Image 1 (tube, helix red, strand yellow):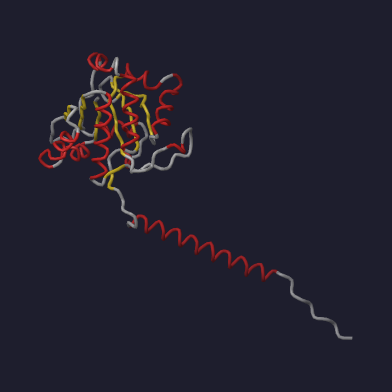
Image 2 (tube, one colour; image 1 turned 90 degrees about the vertical axis):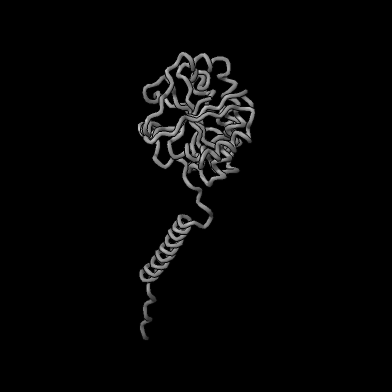
Length: 250
């Protein structure tokens, strides 16, 4: 299975002198891990994981756990529309995985009227499973984006692996694969309307961080403003209330 990462995220996979990649290989020895060579041109990184469907899905879970162990994740707002909102796994931070799948193979993943894709997302508890319509630069591959916890990502990979197992290898041989470009993934996702903050992994904010404190401060000020407004309203109401008239003397 081929997947693509921005240049910076590739460094998190490799680590200093390859330490992280070595650790991943030791943790999952039943799969073959290969990553594109480092360049000085900030080219995207292509990670290839080969093995059985079960072992590959477990390897992707291990990779997602590795990102979280390095304090990295991607921020996604709660899902408010569509089916299966209550089934999203939120036990751990979300991590993005972007697979490179031949255009010819994607039909098996999407299904009629996207029903197969939607059912995969719901049954696996993922936050997002999406196949971009456009092909990534100068290739015949499309980006299949999975966003979720390590457990939900592993479940999605298991389902996708079984869906494409019979045709993926032959389709890859017949397809023009994506060749890494400088900031290629970032430019591709930007054209699809993806916010910049959801392209790269971002540091996980600890509870009580500056951002949380600012948010709490805003809430406090909003509450104070509301209280002040209520008090002013009461005073205005009191001013407008009728005053008792003095009784006339006999």
